[in-house]
Length: 361
Image 1 (cartoon, rainbow, N blue to C red):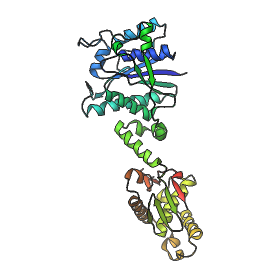
Image 2 (tube, rainbow, N blue to C red):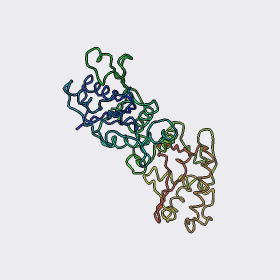
Image 3 (cartoon, rainbow, N blue to C red):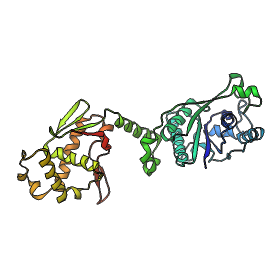
Image 4 (cartoon, rainbow, N blue to C red):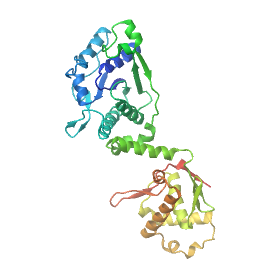
């Protein structure tokens, strides 16, 4: 069963919550089942009607939501006056009082990101994220976080009203006020597909917002259509963009072995697997297919005895070094080197880039 959730950022004007609720529930006839507000310490006091400044409302937001639902005969959404529904970013036990400093602009997006990750994890939840209230930076953080985690049906909305109606009441009381209230859907880029595997794992769920942004940016770089590695077998050459690097025969086939394994569905190679007789026979097959007897492989030590752990270490180091010299952007090169998944006694090696990133000639 679909669970429609309204999520708002709010500073000193909690009216934006009920205005958003009105536009969705009354104008668009979308039942809203839950309401959450991301705010600051003072913003929470305003929501609770406890702020002492004369310009802020003194009626609790919860009461205004109930009044709106009673007037328009709506089922009241779940909204409790607790930390689960009124969410304030904290550093240890110190709550964020405002969004002003660089430090504040780390804490708040981390909190928004954490919250949206959790709510978007449930496939039955549909998120309606309103950026109408709060400081501009709060709205930006909400939009950025939604861009990372939104599914197809999640929406980013902005509610507008005429200037003379701003901050007067919590929701329209007559037809004229209702006509003056408009809702706009804001288009945004959905990046969740780039993060789908990482979202399922624990690592990303524990990451901070800026780390997720860096990861996503790196993924976007790799997915650029031009970012493909050309594997020229005859010339033993790797080409990327306008640059190329020549590898020694065994270095080239070492790298080709990992690409070939990936294309055959094996993306995790252990050192033990590499030093096996089966791998030695695979390399002999490569030589016979690509280079005939030009390189006199029967005279080589590996042909007689197979590969050693030291052979693996040296070849991996040299190949990775040449790839990093070929691709001078570290975010991209990390996807094409032979990476390691370290696990005591069971480490495996792989190339992160997907197989469609390689063109074999």
